[in-house]
Length: 327
Ligand code: NDP
Image (cartoon, rainbow, N blue to C red; front, side, top):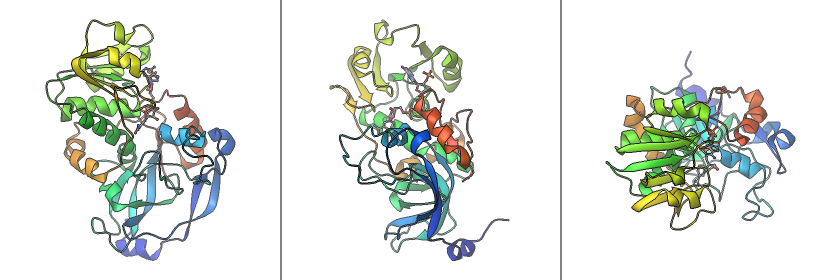
């Protein structure tokens, strides 16, 4: 039976069960379950969310393995509950929240800046906290697992296309077409922006998957160097970290975007700014099914197997998103 709004507001806990790490390292060495992580007081613009599903991102692994030690040394956030993406139910509101009410089904990426000012309480937890501007109402046609797969990946895809001023009739090459971000770049380029032609790189076994996703020209990177092709593109969107090669595949007057540091000018490098408004803007495409959640076969991963899930994401072999559910 569905709980009513009142049920949620009267059963708000002060502590939560969560995965956490208190030192940097590989997931299998540092991740542990905390039975009683204290939930911080809500700020005026924040909501408390009962987490139902959470998806994993490579940024979680990078943070865990101390990839950002040049930015944080020592890391002020430790101990850390990992997890950026969430889908769940609002159980408590900060005093200034107007967009949501208790009982609403929401989703989003809870870290506004991709690598700075990150939250210590992430989404691999039974409860988490986010500012209302980072969240959107979950479209009813999406399950919690599907909704949790979208935020960071689709918002990154969108921000890159937007920064490059991508538009109808242009061609695009997506490096890393089968990943969490790449699969969304392909779908947005095709269905939201009206790309004239889409090429994307992947390994041999994923060529057919990319064709079905809408790619006109899947390129097997184990057999072909994309920058040696005679065909050039209006935009090359690099999700792998091959920017110098990407620049060689750009048409005269075209652009390259990369999301993997350091990025090489004139390629545009950016770090995602999480915004619930992007999810709201894309909602019609999620509702019509034109832009689909892409779930790795490992999904859903039970909460007890979060370590295995992070180890898998670390291999950079996931197809679409790995989502932890139920939480
Ligand atoms: P994923 O873990 O989802 O990517 C996995 C995919 O990468 C696999 O399907 C794999 O396909 C593909 N892949 C691996 N190597 C290659 C290669 N040489 N050529 C083509 N495809 C390859 O990662 P995400 O998509 O979530 O993220 C991609 C990168 O972008 C990460 O480094 C991440 O940290 C970064 N990122 C940066 C953001 C920013 O704001 N700057 C935001 C989000 C992500 P196959 O098995 O066929 O090799």
